[in-house]
Image (cartoon, rainbow, N blue to C red; front, side, top):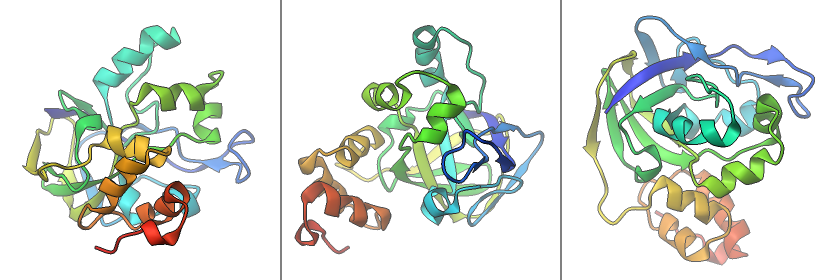
Length: 215
């Protein structure tokens, strides 16, 4: 398992980018080593900090194997970084990663927190009809990470799984929990140190604050 590409992007104005009309979804390959800060990669910006600026969404990873699955279905080539990910991986089952799982990449340590939720900016960026529904139904969302230890990383670095909680909730399962699977949501709420974002989602899925457990 290794990093195929490290991708960063600057925020730019774009009429198609939702109400904000500004986006940094266009991630491009970074050369050399890239510093990992508390809230993401050096040189990477976020336009919509209200929805994408949380420290639990500091780094986003997507698997090259999932791009390869999408290409014939979309009828187009997909470059590394095209889905807006910071890390394009090879050989890693990103959707099978478990909430709370820790990866060492280069000298940085990252922890799995959340699946990617498709939005209108993602849809408009790719200009694909019915994209939000198609992406959701595929069950291949990729994973967000928080930064546990700062460091640096680069293309070619190995991915070392330092810790994988037993009987955990995978990113694919967490994605289904987000979209209404109540049993899976209850399992998410039992994850120690889960992202605080899950508590808000749980209120929607479970219907009341009474379903929200406290770590």
